Image (tube, rainbow, N blue to C red; front, side, top):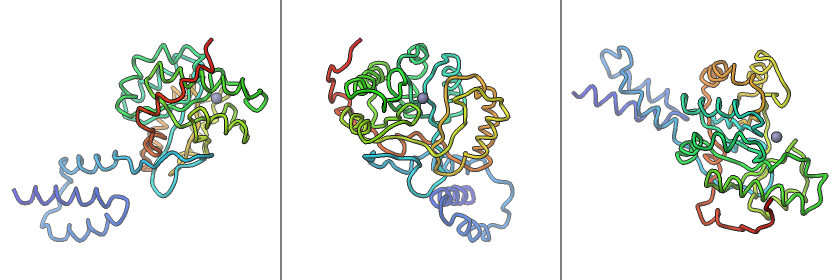
Length: 278
Ligand SMILES: [Zn+2]
């Protein structure tokens, strides 16, 4: 019927205008209908599709990024280290259950990544999960000579490629400790983008659930890159609260690869330099 078609058209229009003047369009169009009634479930699909569509992606920048670029309601949840296989598994389950988009920065020295690789691979293939390099064993790179820095980065790069089949332009230095020298070595090894953060779950140490949710209240804001860790169980006990915050604030989770495109496969074959092994 015409009215149904009209509502679908209206929904599509609102979806397109969702980040702009949707309210104006909606008001004007709504005046024509005799009985607006309760919203039809049909309207949800086009809107949802528009919300899920990544805005970018842009080419990965060379240099340091600390926030998502431009306007929007993106929230990049980036999860580091992975000292606990149980916590990595919980994040994987969260992603599967809720559709939350995550960027992991693993240290390949922890068994958690291989132990969860089978569950992670489909999420990687669909793009719901992306990766960045965080070094093999989490040293302070600024204290190491060039060759050791390169070894830490290249070994983990190769681990990510072997385990998940992906390359990544993103590098996050352990402890956030980096300088021009370490940035240059990372870039030489295929990671031009130094992915820092401007929000945190505070969970590099053990927190109570309430403390962790307090950090989330402070930092879950639009266009923020939030750092968290797959190390301690606390975060897994407050997923519900974190999701509530994301919904209440109308935030949209994005991976760093949704925002800055990961180069296509040729990139992944570049520089299997043999700098590392063992
Ligand atoms: Zn770390």
